[in-house]
Length: 398
Image 1 (cartoon, one colour):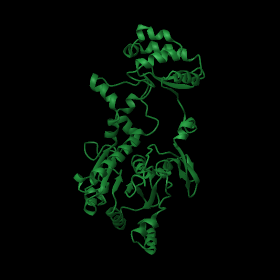
Image 2 (cartoon, rainbow, N blue to C red; image 1 turned 120 degrees about the horizontal axis):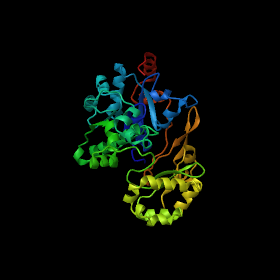
Image 3 (cartoon, rainbow, N blue to C red; image 1 turned 180 degrees about the vertical axis):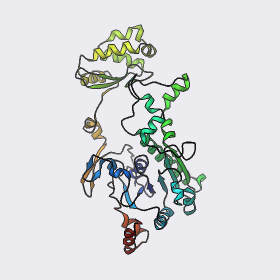
Image 4 (cartoon, rainbow, N blue to C red; image 1 turned 45 degrees about the vertical axis):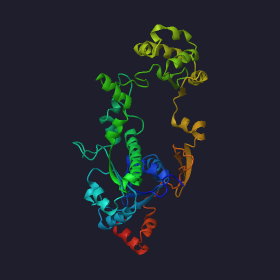
């Protein structure tokens, strides 16, 4: 048994935040039915290049462990099909702009009448309330609005976005956590079997991730500034370049590590220099210390420095590209690169499952579905005969 065996999820999401949430649930055993627009599907089916065959690499990356059902939710018959699905579902996840589902008569209040135990999670850019509720949102917009871009980039340089859509992915992770919390409450004695509505905002989710940077603002009243690869309160704690032009990271997070660091780079005299005696001293003299270290690190290749520092138990590591990452022996040992069969592509590579349960592990059971691949299977299970399914396909219901 996987931990979410028996949980049925109706996934009405597209792009990234919602699909990532539903994939997390599917990876650990939930039966996820991805409901898509007939003829078009999730927007990301067309996001490319790159494509693998005719499939978008983007879509393939966040839609495994799902079955695909096409429904034109503007059609009354399609709405009735959705209601039948919802009657014994556990979870609905959607990321339309607020009120879209209500306008289809498929909002939470409608679903609660059909299934009082439903957990209904709505993911949107700004949430279901407030002055910005109707604004459209994509990840880059939210990285800017949330303040994330203001602290990302080089000192004195332009604001930069993070290299992956962390506001989308973070919202998806918060949503998966919220769904699990709501299911736990529903199934507890105090929950009485009742579901609830979850209002998940990408803005809220990203601000919650600001943690210590927000703490610095609360403490000083000053907005934190961009520091490139450096840390605002620890020195040296950043990236450096070796003599071969490759970059590596160093993380000196304590005075004990500072002493080891000085030994590891063969500069023990720095340990006794009053300008660098404590982390506070090093922060106050950041620019001169970093400049000195940058010059010193040009004397050897990056991998050699990493080996020297690791030999004295100082956290250090290469700055890998993704080719390096997926050829790394630790990554491979942890099964974070997997392959799974696909009906039109032979096999595809996928990132592995990050949570390793001892008793109920997840698995890559279902390939990212073809558009409408499971229409007949799902509708047959609901009691629709093949002839009626053919008629619905012809008339555009599915």
